[in-house]
Length: 156
Image (cartoon, rainbow, N blue to C red):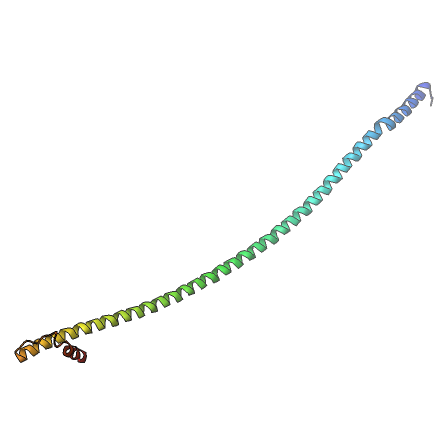
């Protein structure tokens, strides 16, 4: 092998090129690679955090949904109890109102019965006076004999 000046020149130039690349080209490439590696690792960490946050949010949403269902069931139960209570109260009020109406109707019937009795007594008294007039042949003054007629009506 014959080493000539061209080969030595190329080796010197190559060494200078390597030194130049190591001094000026390699550090920006290494820093760009390190920066990119950092961005990728930050992105992966953010993705992991987001995944964990999503999992926590889903768990929290399920817990809240379960709690909301329990509250809804409780509200429905309370509404059913209240509706039953209202129905029972309405039945009680209706029963009381019916009893009150029955008592009022009985009182009205009793009043009507007493009124009819009084009318009947008055008619019997008039008939008795008419009969007595015919029997006695003279007129009887109802005003003069009202006390006697009242006693007669009371006896009837």
